[in-house]
Image (cartoon, rainbow, N blue to C red; front, side, top):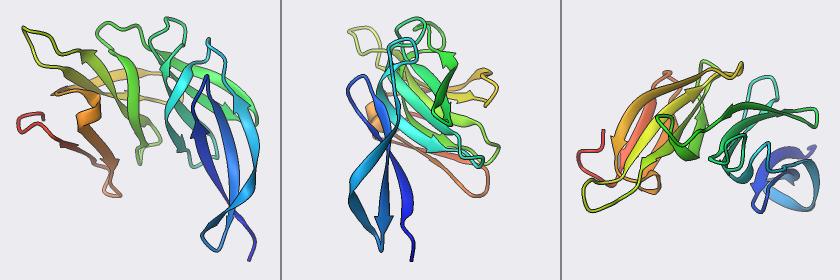
Length: 165
């Protein structure tokens, strides 16, 4: 049986590496597919593989405005799809999944906890062409939310906060 490739994102400024697995065990050696720089983003927080083999990386920092980015990596070349501005689109994107429509869905921080209001997160969609849509505002910080994409095409969000969705 031939080894099956698995992609992993490793933190720092960031890189994408592939580790081959065989019979469910990761091999000791890996191959770096791409190393990130600040304009593309830094601190990877999520990684998804598209049907065409493109890897979509969600970066918590960096990007054009320093607030995070979504980057497509194909054949060793990175293309910035969207850079977060830290305004209505949020910042520090995280927890991304690939939808059945080929778009990337994720969560971003819209506001932080302060004395006047609870933290708020945003559910976003980024298309392979770079189109951005904020789909919903959710109560609670990003790290209290879990995001999943179902085979039925629906997105599922689980929250530690009772009235989050």
